[in-house]
Image (cartoon, rainbow, N blue to C red):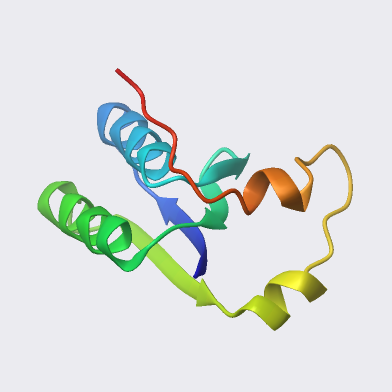
Length: 95
């Protein structure tokens, strides 16, 4: 399944952790707080748990599942990674 993740987090450390978690889930950064790509439900559930544990009351996050048809119809303009990079199967591992 493809996912679109965005967040609005006020604390710098929490924002850095959120970006790291999105990358670990196999998503690629499109903008500072917007990630997209292919991942599995287990990685997304872990992402939800991680976000829920650290968010301040005024912080927000949004995870949108995207079906294959909508993904294929998505239009990326400007300096963006190509859809093949976004749709890779294996999540990235950071150590």
